[in-house]
Image (tube, helix red, strand yellow):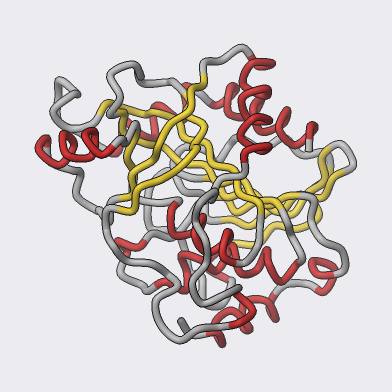
Length: 272
């Protein structure tokens, strides 16, 4: 990866962003853009204006960096993400995590919308990510090693911090919504998976599948951050769903679950 793009992005942000470590960083995936409750907004920046990041190209991703306070905590929220399938390289995909690292952030919450594989799930359920399967075989860490990003061969035994997963469960319980543990499978996209692929991933132990999150989680874990992952099941995967898949389903599911999303995030931040 080109570290200069990260330097340019960091240089564009106001100095106060780096004066004290954020209490948490949040990356909001498809449909999660309206899930923030802020006491005081300190900064709003459009992705299109941040060097090396660029505007979001996917419906349901707001494309805005928001720095705000909530219950006395400083939070850095990336509202929307760039994806591997957009073909812009790894830099925009992991740039939010690198900026958080440079800010001194120790805790990050990654959210997404996913397709349900486990038949016990239904659209509208939440899944606390306990582990993942990278079906692509590619990683943002491939290439020249940067010592600032941790060791050359980072351990991935516990990518998603157990304590943070328990806080997500407690948060969902307080809000009164259903959440189960699950394994998230990362596929490159942008096409949805075939029924045969879904059967294969289910046999491997995947509960949900999507086109994001794993690259950011791998990068953040390698850099020493504590990672939490939360997925909204927006639809059932190919071969399980009774109709063709469409991104509009993802956006609609996010809109329907907006209050639950906001409640879980708020409770999670309050318990950190």
